[in-house]
Amino acid sequence: MYKLALYFNLFLITTIGYAQDIAILHYSGGGDWYSNPTAIPNLIEFCNENIQTKINTPAKVVKPGDIDLFQYPFIHMTGHGNVYFSDEDAANIRLYLQSGGFIHIDDNYGMKPYVKKELLKIFPSHTLEELALDHPIFTSAYQFPKGLPKIHEHDGKRPQALGIFYEDRLVLLFTYESDLGDGWENPEIHNDSPEIRRKALQMGANIIKYAFEH
Image 1 (cartoon, rainbow, N blue to C red):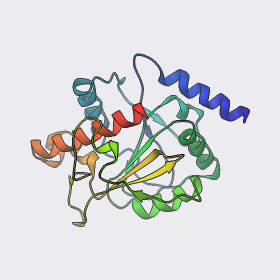
Image 2: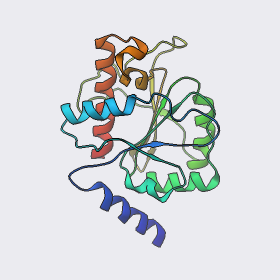
Image 3: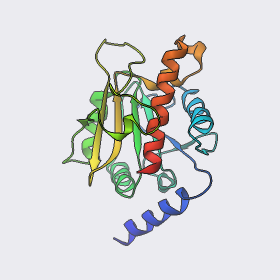
Image 4: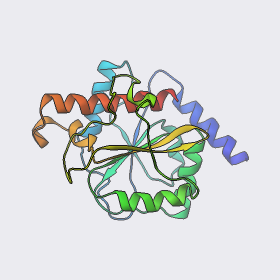
């Protein structure tokens, strides 16, 4: 209990203030955690310019087992391949989420089977559930009445916003078959239209705003 209180206090101290840091999760397992390198910088710039956030640049990089995890109100995770959390990683992430943290996992294609398996280490009794269209994450800054936008086709499946809730708070968001991060990247990388990029950045801003306020 003392450790939980200490970590929670660290989290509050580092997230209340004029400017905030966010982080990218450097996980193990061989997956390309570093993919979409221009995505988060562009999202930070969009949020600072359009929804009055004051997020420091560049985004930090943090590993799942680090105590530094508790410095960030928002952690982003992406990639294509395998994901692995040790028991110590899983315990640290669990404590981070229970203490007020938020993780967004954006499937850059192919992450789902690995993510689902590793999330069971964090919350064995919780499963990913699809967010209802009236969840406030779809309206926190911009309106998405139909839910998560489709940015890239991949397998042609519908986009899904899947979440894990802890004590009725959404603590982890897994965006699947949308690939928001590709839409956040520089326009010449994927040749997305301005409309597609705008939708991706606006949904990203919704996620950031929700994470900061809940």
